Structure formats: C-alpha cells, structure tokens
Length: 473
Image (cartoon, rainbow, N blue to C red; front, side, top):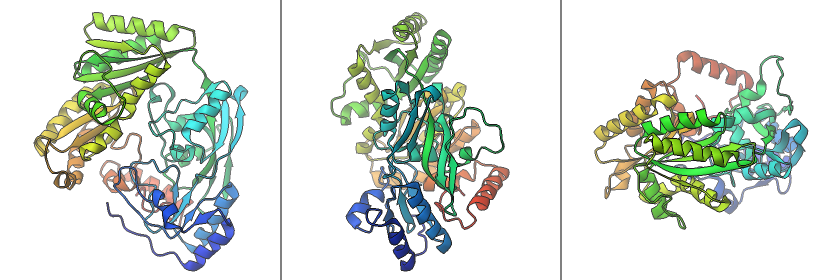
C-alpha cells in the first residue's frame, strides 16, 4: 500500500545522529533495516535513510533533540507487530526501542514492575511470575510485541474483560518528548489527583506525542486455580447469554471469553500444523472460556457448574475442558492462530471493531447482510473478544475467486463494514489503533470537536509535527 513520503533527510543530520549514538546505535545496512520496513501482513513496505537503535533513554533524547532542531520527522517502532502501519517509515528517521532492554525494578509489595520499552510482553509476564505476581496483558504476538509498543497503541488482547486495556495497567511512564526533553513519570501510585494525567495522553498516542522509553506496570496476585474450556454454540446470541451466566456464577472470575466462527476454526485446522478439532461435533460457533480463582480448585469447580447449567438451558451443544497445561495451550492456540490461518487463504479485508456487547448478535447479522449485498459470495470470518465487545471481522474473497480484484475493493468494503459499526455507536478500531490505515477514515467517525481537541493537544506538544507525522489526523 502506498503512503506519502517525508522530505529527504539532510546528510548533515544523519552524520549528527551517528555521532550522537555511536557504534551500535545506528545502521544504514539494507539487510539489517529490511525487517523493520514491512508490516506483518505485507500491506506496507516503507523506506528510511537510517535505523537508530539507542540503548538508553538519554541516547533517545539526544537523537530526538537533533531531529527536532532540524525539523526532521521520526517514526518510532517497537516490535513491529502493529497491524495498521503506524510503525512503518516512509522517508522518516526510524527509531527502534528494541535495545531498551532493562528490567529496572520489580516490587511485589507495591504490585509494580518497571521495565524499559524494548522488553517483550512475554518477558514482562515472566518477570512478574518470577516475583510471584501476574501481569495480565496477553496477545498472540506477545513473544515479539514490546511493552513500549503495547503502551503506544493501548493494546487490548484477551484479558480485557477482567483487567482492562493497557492504559489500565500502567502506573507510570518515562518518555522522550518531541523537543528531546525527558518526562520522568515513573510512579507507582494508584492515586494522584494533581492535575492532568500526562501518562494517559501518551498511552494510545501511537508515538505522536513522544517516545516511551520505560513504564511502571501494575501487577496482580497469581490465581491459584485456572480452568479453560471450549464449547459449541448455535449462535452469537447464545454466547452473550452464556457470558452473562458465567459472570453471574463467578463474579469477576471470567478472565477470557472468546468467540470463533466455524469458518475460522476450519482455516486453523487446515493451515496450522499440529492442531486438531477440540470437540466431537462441528458446531457453527465456538466459545473459549477461561476462569481463574484465588482458591485451589475454585476455577475448575466453577467451570463445571457453568457448563452443567448451560447444557441444561440448551445454550451449548458440546464442550471440552482442558485437563492440563498442555491442553490449555492447545485450546488457546486454536484461537490465537486465527489471524495467521487467514493468510494462506489469499488475504482479505480485515477489521478490528467494537460494539456494545448486547448488540454483537445484531451487528454480526446486519454486517453479514451488508457484505453479501456489496460482494456476493464473500466469506466472512468472525472471531474476537466478545467479553469486551471487540470483534475481528475479516472478509475473504469468494471460494475460487481471484484475489487481486477483491483486494482492490478493500476501501469500499471496509466502508460497508464500518458504516454498520457507526450505526451501533461502535469503534472502527477497538485495539489496533489508527496508524496509517485508518487515520483519514476516522475523520468520518469523530466529531469536529474531538478532532479539533486532539489536534490542539498535538500542536501544543509537538508544534513541528516531527513525531510520526502521518498518523492521527
């Protein structure tokens, strides 16, 4: 996908950046830079005159000061797992935070942990576990996605139902602002009513207000029991009723509640090695449920009660409860590999939307009818975090159809899907952000007041608009 390029960077600026960061802090080698230039789905391949890889916050600040003084644009990048292109440079200086790798502090008594931006999500989870605590953010790309990128995009994932989005899990932030000044905001406080919360401006800003270099994260006790099940249901409406019953039975014990259409499950079984049918039957829809409890055996007992009542009520037609950690991982893999399993089908129109939970069944029906009217025969794969209203609504070409002409209708097709989202007062980007992909389209779903206010904030903090300039209005 094409994107306008930034002006060429003056060689004098490039030389100044090299001198400031020193050996190991930059590269112009095309082979080293190449993996940083292509988005995971292959939708964008960008270009940059230089890749900066600073190892300290002070080095990031030095690089930003040089760019700010010269008016040179910067694209920040974490693990390059973003799906809307916000991390791909088109002529800007590319600054990767992957070498900011220190775990600065883990304090169980404060239920807090301070890590640098280049620490991966999986590593953060492991550090918390080693201290007898739990960091709940969980994504399919957690082995590659970094904490800095998770914060910059306000990542969601599978545990939002119980623990919230990334912005709910951040206590403090350190960041380099657009003029090169360092914001020292690494606090462990739960309460701080002393004016605007600047860290919340940086969370979800997609690198437009500064570069996050470290964060203090909120930790939780480790639950002493955990149960995972996959159940078969006839419709999304049944999943909503099942969710309500599970929450009523367990209180806050429902950690994840994931909906999957049979079509997506078939793609996983077809394209992902070492996967197998989770149930004896092949229902039209599946739900993956994860419960957690502080008491030994509590989650397992609760799962049995929930499923028994659901069978009696006719809500579920089949079920399987994971009997050990290996089976739990197998069940989760069936859900987490959905995106990867779609790629061999030729690609399509992918959407990350949210609507009120109560309206999910209506949205799926109405959007499906609208897509069929727009492009008869198009295949719709739906999966996502139904417990928080977030659906990944992906549309593939009809069976046997040419892929290229179908992909060429992506913008018009997305407008069809998003227009239905708008009627339900939903969001066209539930957890992926706007990036390059949705920045202009989002103008149609934001009020003039919202756009003007966001633009004013950005102009005040980054008057030269050097931070990720092609993102966010």
